[in-house]
Length: 242
Ligand code: NDP
Image (cartoon, rainbow, N blue to C red):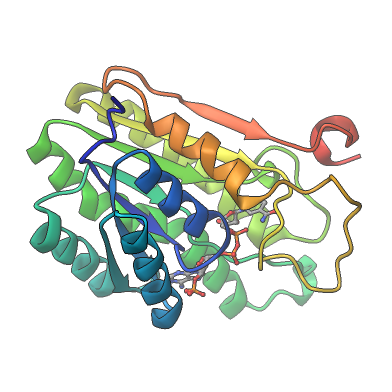
């Protein structure tokens, strides 16, 4: 039996792409899921799909840059399911602007969405993990946390920051049976990609392929931490950056 059977996983950015696929994969492993994102109708559609699979899901419309909304997300999770065991910090936006054209406002938007959100969700999940006596966080980083793409300073900084936050929380979690890790996707065919980008066939990963790896990282005994993983396109030289 999977350790995830009956456990509760909060997935941010669950309205599309990797987050949506993770929610479905958690349910395949017997977990209950709490779905967070801004697009309420996409979340309700996913709840219907999961209930159709015989699973349990709660949609909480959440802007992950808003601490009150995050407090409400975890409060609703507790009301419905009694606690939270796993957190997937997946919500994120892409950004491709050279430094001299990046406004301070835009810089803050990328950092708030991709990095500060993970801090806030960890902050509100932590007391629930302490209460449960265990917990697990997987932050969704990027290959950009390893090798920057050109002309994306804010996105790259947000993902390097997420790597740092992961290390810090992994150290702090050890004494409390809380495992914190990071998963770095390479190129995944999701809505984050501009429609104009044409990728060769058999190149981009599907969200489902990536979700299997992320949920596998959570499907371990509480005394183990799958600390870091990176899935990149095999045919790209030097870790996907040429
Ligand atoms: P999608 O655009 O499909 O998903 C992004 C999700 O983030 C959406 O569900 C969106 O929901 C949510 N989101 C964005 N801003 C907010 C916000 N302020 N509050 C709440 N939710 C928000 O892209 P992916 O699935 O590809 O992206 C998921 C993660 O994977 C991101 O962190 C991304 O950086 C990372 N990644 C993706 C790669 C790829 O090639 N696809 C490569 C490397 C990393 P909504 O708009 O409804 O709020």
